[in-house]
Length: 443
Image 1 (cartoon, rainbow, N blue to C red):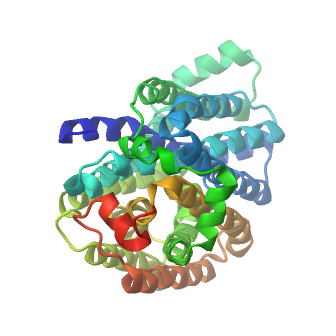
Image 2: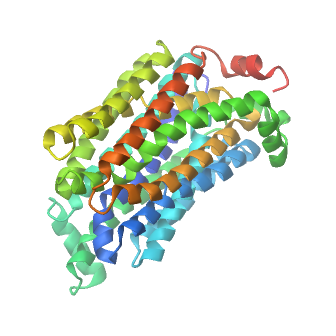
């Protein structure tokens, strides 16, 4: 795109991928208790759902495939077909009547999310003006906040006892008959929420397949090598390898914490905090609204202010949030709200913003999406394993939450220190200029 309006329009269209990414995670999380009661699931079952979902392994598998496909066939190739896979995934969840079917739906949705993320972040950066690249990435992150906020609102309206639950009961009777159990009726509220993701995915598919191919991808098409050649270059170039290690470290250590919060937060509020499902979802919804608001503020500053300063601020807020757990605790509303607000503030200036921004700035166009896909694979794959470990540390009723909190603080401190040391100075520079300085003229 050649102008500010054009890049903004394409950013909004592509950012729906982030809405659907976070929306899929939170849709599963907000209805977790309902599916647990309907299918008789244990905490281990819940851990496996997290393990293969858009939160972890599903996205990891999709990312490494989607990243290299985007470099080989173009960003538009991903936008043309990927949302179809997403719609199949959420449709499978909607129609689930047993645990294997639910698991399959989570996996398909997760793979689609992973395929789309590297291409979307790459496309946004490549179609942005130099002085708006950070802003456009932040807009994408705002979409990542809007998704959970909207999904949680829908979840509360349709949840048992919600304002629209009567409509859910009528829908359940229509499709399941009058003899449905209470648990089977209640879970229809989650089915409706997943249907809303299906609708947004259909809209996103229609918008994204109309986008023009990235001008930078087209300009560098002649430099494109085969898939295996790109992988070989990525792993053999010392600058690229160091960049992968740096970005994967700051994103992984933060995401190990954020992935748990994204999937288990309402469940944690209910078990460790002792609040109702409705209260937990309201708190989570308000927290996402804070994330959106803070991200909007950051979007106005990021192209004019030190990236390192914003990065450090976000991590300090994250660490303070978890310090609340080990000092005040979350057994009372004061501790719960302090944690929710602080975690919301950090979400608006989180390492994910800088991972998306730096990940698209610090690699050449020929393997830009592939490098991001590789890192996303590493991060979400290890997050999947951590999600399983977390369920054992946490316990059935939150008895291990304090121990888990100390683990979270340690991880966030690593992200803070590594980010402070390695933060690159890319603000206000073109992607071509950054690539030339780091890799030379051949890239």
